[in-house]
Length: 357
Image 1 (spheres, rainbow, N blue to C red):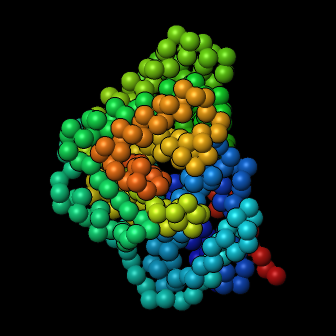
Image 2: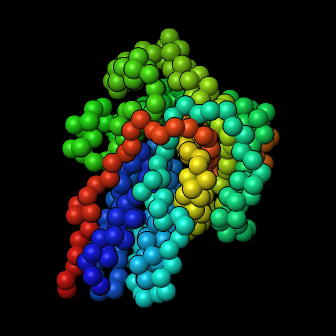
């Protein structure tokens, strides 16, 4: 295949979201095949329970590559996890010719981002909710539920915001997040990964406090004086202005199921952007709930396990699938202006290897 085609496919895949923009995937091109490798070290994070976020990201990546491939007259057959789940090789894509199809989502591959800008008050109309459902292939394996009534949105904002003080209170969570924060434009341009502090859309004073909190000792100081609760308060105020929330859930705890959910997640995200909505993922509470349910809360204190169970119980009042199925992704929709900053991507030349053999 033409190298330019392969590079376009890889670039489309790199545009997919990854946890904290860690970009853990690498690519190898052979004869009519594209191999996707995974770096467990880059993806290492307390909140990436059982690599949940990474396999969701893989599903998003495959969706992007397929949208781009079809626009160029190609498609692919895939072999997921061809070895064991601990292998670095996570997918083999066998490229083949196909009719050209220009998806209406194609222009949004590069426009898609997490947008935390201040939202204006707007309730998602029923027609937009219906369009989101029509954008995915719902079945017994992957299910989406949407809340868009103002009372439900405010209730969910309150419950999900209870997670955020843990960013400063739990050392493993703290280290996993701060590992990827980029504090100035020079760092952004040098690393081309992680996230610029401005994408969080906090005021300058809050940004200074967050930077000081990079030191675990200072973070603990804030916790002692309950200042970590300020993060949850700010998030709650932001979330209350959301137009809707959506929960993706699956029926079984298998990597392939997470990948399927990731495919649908990317379709939802792109379709929402096409309809003028900004998207912001809120997955911390999901990760903790799965850790408590499937691993008895390994790595959490008794009080944190109690908090997690309380959040799960209350969220299940409006999202029954949160406890009745396996929740994998919670996202909020809002109407905002453009983001203050965007996360960069590594250059294709740094993540793609051409195998001429």
